[in-house]
Amino acid sequence: MSETLLTHINRDGLHHIDVAPSFETDDSFSVSLANHGAPIHVHLHLDDNLSDVASLSAGNHYIEANSTEAVPITVHDGPARGKLKVVTGYGAETAYVDVDIAEIDPEKDSIPVDESLSKPRQKPVQSDTDASELARNIPLIVLGIMALVLVLGVGVLVDWVLALFGAITVLVGIGVAGYFLVR
Image 1 (cartoon, one colour):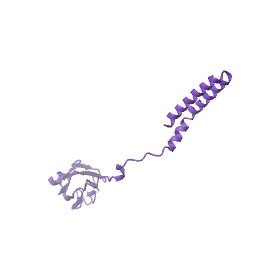
Image 2 (cartoon, rainbow, N blue to C red):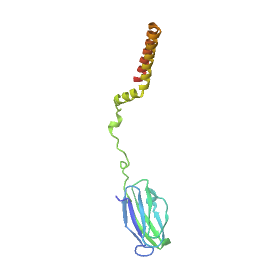
Image 3 (cartoon, rainbow, N blue to C red):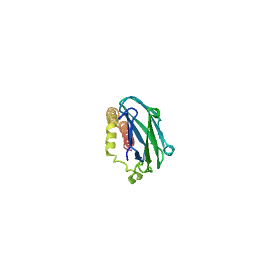
């Protein structure tokens, strides 16, 4: 069904209205007021049947010379049948359009949901993240190796028993840090 009701104003003379005699829709639509001549005032009015299920943004419109204005009509409910009145020149010319608003399809604006969305997603493989974690912690690993070398160097100069105790302490510290890095 159409979404725009084309209305030509001043095409065949001052205040002349050229519009389709009927219009069908099942959703909100707009009235396109195309002025083919001098500036003009146009009044739009929904009869009682249509105003129960639809609304106009404004009734009176000033249309510049040789320009077009789209007037939205919001449909809230349906179905309904009624008349849209189009008036120019403060009543000099009047035209009526039979408007038929069909039942609004509730599934038209719905979004289909795939059943796979209800199932939990599997966790991604952590190999890439483990590699990036390792690369980010390289300075910590280098610092641990340097501490181990320093303890062994001091042990050679001072006493092997003290160096062995220091090396074991550093190795335990590196093991604990490594455990927390890969966890």
